[in-house]
Image (cartoon, rainbow, N blue to C red; front, side, top):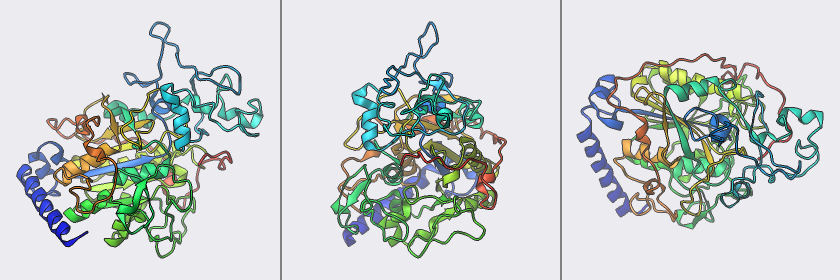
Length: 492
């Protein structure tokens, strides 16, 4: 950034601080007394974003009462959806599964395009690979039975209910469920996580020059993907840059066996379970030049550190929590959806039981659809998305009770809330943020994007915690993982 640009940005940050002080009557982290006199979103001093893996809205909440779920005949109550299935020669309908393991389907950008199929939303089965050993190639193989429905549907057509994910449904019933939360981009995990922290995904021909970056939502070659032990290559501007400039604390918490010093080596922790690692395609923050240049790698911490920070009341204003493999809920992983649900519940319980609960908002979502069926056509907002619909929830002492938010939202809503709460409304906008890049759209400013603060009722007294039962063995790297071996048919 040029000297003049830095001066202009510093001046804008000073204005932001004055605006914040004019709204609040106390400092940002002064605790419950300050929260009681603050207004609106300024009652929230801690924003926690928990991002799980690869589930569509219809797969997890397609039968949730009042939500825009699986289409039904209003008279008979039967599902009206029937998706073409070239492997069986007839269409296949959604089915309930009690299995805690699913295989899902391919979920890169070409697969998203095929699933959506011009708005027909009917490509989910026919896009599955036609290879021996897959349930949809030889559906009567005994080894495939757990991954098909009663009419031999592949499990991309499956859905679960409160019987399989009771805690998630309890959160949805007691807090806020978002039934039009779309992944920010039309692709898989890596570009989705890049959007979560920067509102863009790009390939930079010069990894030190933001102006050489061009939109990229495929990321299928090693040259496109940053990996541990490599120098950073994401040159455009992430939200962490604006937070640093404004003096707002942040951390990203990852699996305990993750390489949290990614430029100097990646040894696992003593006695750690090597499976409890967050892949670099999920832990994208260290791949940004702006993060490394700012000396911020120490802000990458572990899940164990999240639990201790929550208990001690030392969580930063902004936290992202990214799972390790066994608790990610990624189809085909070594853990079950119960492992993932237990891990998330433990995180939420820790935040609720900590001293900062009364000033906290937790946002829970899944980074992409994982190949599972969803019936809602995603809006097209620019060359990069949106992607297919995923579950989203808001859990907070100020969250409305048992509400369903039908606004159109995306992960860009998270960035907009961070900016509105802590940055005086400053955006990741090349024209104003002091670190320009050629991103095609200022995503947070799109008119289609709903107001995520609708989920809150700031007139109510802070609600007490809702502590749910859990068996959080997957969080302890020394404990055994309660699951089967990883299934070989795992879609990247």
